[in-house]
Image 1 (cartoon, rainbow, N blue to C red):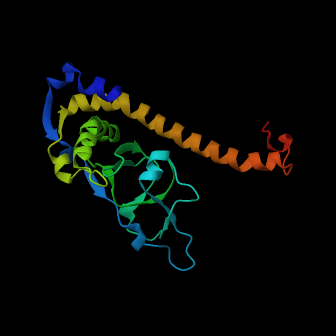
Image 2 (cartoon, rainbow, N blue to C red):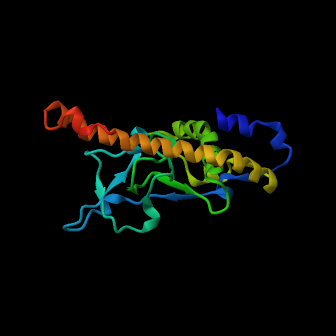
Image 3 (cartoon, helix red, strand yellow):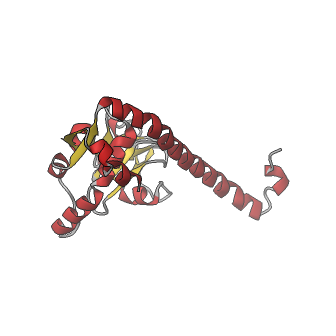
Length: 208
């Protein structure tokens, strides 16, 4: 996998400084969204829970929260999400605007590239899963302290800039493709029932 080939490349390791996950990124825990239901007359936004993260999107069964929650907890396409309890997952969210529930971290950085903090977090995921499994009684989890002792290697600024010039466009393209796939799936799910029941014909939806 890419993160393994990058992290294990000795050509970069020899010029790297050691740090920890919490040195390169902020891990913002979500809210107990049952306390932030939509106000009367408000449509609200879906709540991002572990289920939604695992399936890559929200659906009709997803809970709703108020759209007026603190903007730090509003998740948008391209945000990195890490579920630290129950089923441990790390992914780039491409499922539309929603509210961040508890047991999920929003991973962000104002200093390092998005791909860099994503792949380092994902690199430690297998270890985190083992830690959570050892702690499991009803639902395994990790603690913030586990992030604080998870080592990362930071290339010199010139090397990181070179890497970013190569990797950032690819990473952004992957996200854009996933968003486009979601939009196409939504369009399919909207048009197909109408085609099947005769409300629309193929000629109605063909594009010149």
